Structures are given as structure tokens and as C-alpha cells.
Length: 155
Image 1: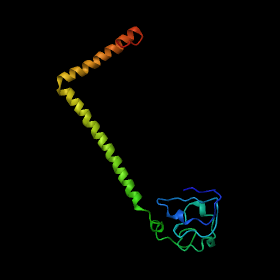
Image 2 (image 1 turned 45 degrees about the vertical axis):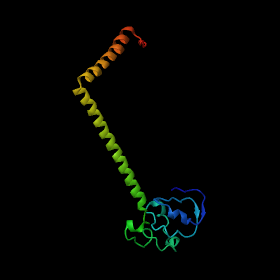
Image 3 (image 1 turned 120 degrees about the vertical axis):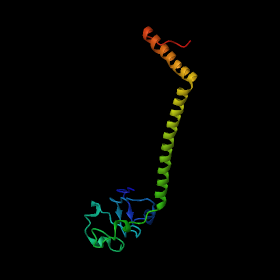
Image 4 (image 1 turned 60 degrees about the vertical axis):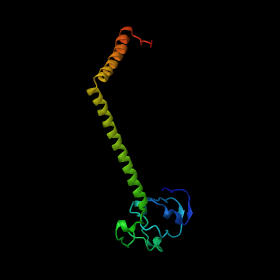
């Protein structure tokens, strides 16, 4: 979520920390004061805060860890706020539905194609009618159009 340069002032609202699936929160370019909410537990590792070397600006937020602070994070995974697994499960289910859709579509195409070929191979009267139709259409389109230079209108 990018809330940068919106001239926001005051403290960071607690409601921003409860958004499910929030991975990046950009509040730069605002006039925020006060403590960082307790639900935010990891200082970003990018260059955006590397210029803020004064540890006193992080005072009162004991849960923060990682550079530029001296508190080491146990691991990258445990220092982040736990994500809702509902979003992951929904995404996996959606991916499975898409996979099954394409699989069924491919199988349907193959089955339909071979059913059509089967009919043409083993049903002599249908095969003759099918190829006769295309021969007749070829004659009507190519022969008449090429010699007259115009399309023949339907009779």
C-alpha cells in the first residue's frame, strides 16, 4: 500500500496493521509522529531507513529488530507478523480450479477431435458427404471467382 507524500500527520493508525495480506506499507513523505504501532514488527531492510541511524527514533518500540538497531531478529520468518493462511488456501484452490479447467478443456478437445475423425474413418456415407461438401465449396469459390474476377452472388 502506497500512502507516500499524502501530507498525513499524527500517529500511524492501528487499523493499517490489521490488513490481511499487507506486505509493503509506504508512508514516506508524510509528517507522522509518535510510536510505530506494536503490530508492525520488522524494520524494512531496504535503503529507505538506512539514513536514519539514530537509535533514539525507535525508542518505545521494543519489538523492532534488525538493522540499524542492535536487536537481532530470530529469523526473517518469525519476525514478521503471521499472515492469514486463508488467502493462501484460497489461492491454491483457485489455482487448482484453473488447472482442472485447462485439463478438462484439453481432454474435451482431444476427445471431440478423435470422435470426429472416427466418424470420418468408419462411416463411409458421412465421409463422402463431408469431402463432397468441401469439393463443391472449393469449386464455387475458386473457379468462379478466379475467372470472372468477382464474387458470385448466391442463387
